Amino acid sequence: MTDDLPFERNPRETVKAWTACLEYCRMGRDRSLVKLGRILGTSRQFIECWSVRWGWVARAALWDAVEQKRVLKLWQDRRDEVRQNDWDMSNKLRLKVHDMLAFPIARKTVDADGMTTIIEPARWTQGDTARIADTASKLARLAAMMETERKVTESDIDAELERILTSVPPHTTGGDAGSRSEESGAETTEPGETS
Image 1 (spheres, rainbow, N blue to C red):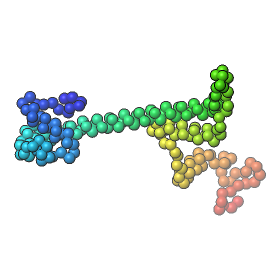
Image 2: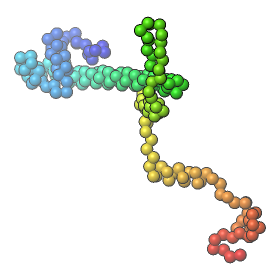
Image 3: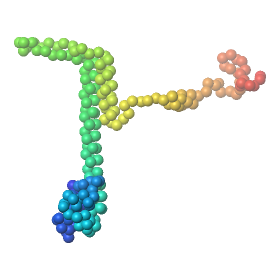
């Protein structure tokens, strides 16, 4: 068995029957013996004999599995290429932001004499660097299959507050309800108790 052909011809199978089987497999999910009979100009009954004798249904299922695997691999390769391109672009954009922050982007022109180079600052704002940095970050995150945006819900905030409140130790002086307050020297009681 090879990668591009999911089965080999049975030594007792005629080339004509094997070729018909290949044609049947290539028809894909809409394959039928009737359609194949029309294509080959022969009866469905004749084609059906070959199909049963040489196990075309099982061979077609194997063909479909190999084809599906090939298509999945093709699209995975395409996704990987896009991710790599996005990653590379994000790195270039990050470098551009570093350059912009280190030195105003300049436009170089050479005088008519070909000897004098004039460097003029390009027109950009701090907002431009922020937008480019954000784009670079999103491209990198997309390439790395990470979230590009964080959505905070009210329940997220409540859970975070609860976590913070439970991690802070209560402000007590270590005594019981009848202990004296360190600041005032007064005796403290719990609500609902009398002193």
